[in-house]
Length: 203
Image (cartoon, rainbow, N blue to C red; front, side):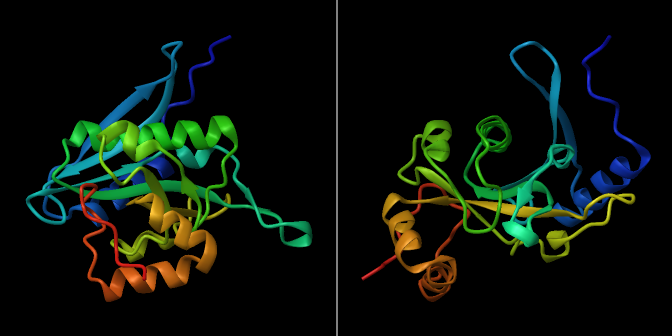
């Protein structure tokens, strides 16, 4: 009996086209398949070079929604399917895709929470070797139409945007919360797409 995941359904193909239009309506999308250590196809990824600006790359997972993602607690606990998206500047597109693949694999394999405000520790530092060690998951501010997508009759799919994060910013997030950190980013006009950026002023 084959363990190969099923080919994308018609609905998933439509979702992929929708995501491609959102990431770069005037750019040529690239679709890639990534495999696990056994050679089994594990994750499909969309890459759009030069979007939203020439020195940027936008990347989204496309099949992470196939894994159950239980959020909330008690009577509010429910299944919320998620894809990850990121926008990065000055980064090789292959490395940007590798970042999301590593994030998705770690989140699924280790059961990390996949929700706004969650931090995936160490991943950005491992892939890029930059001072922004971690990845913060937030609402998809660069792509607001990716906030929720209805795929067939199942749970809605929502995208979370992965943003490189300094350790000091992670500590501020733990102490003050996501809204306070995002306010600092806005006030400091932080180029969150740049993994080599300096940390935002937190004093």
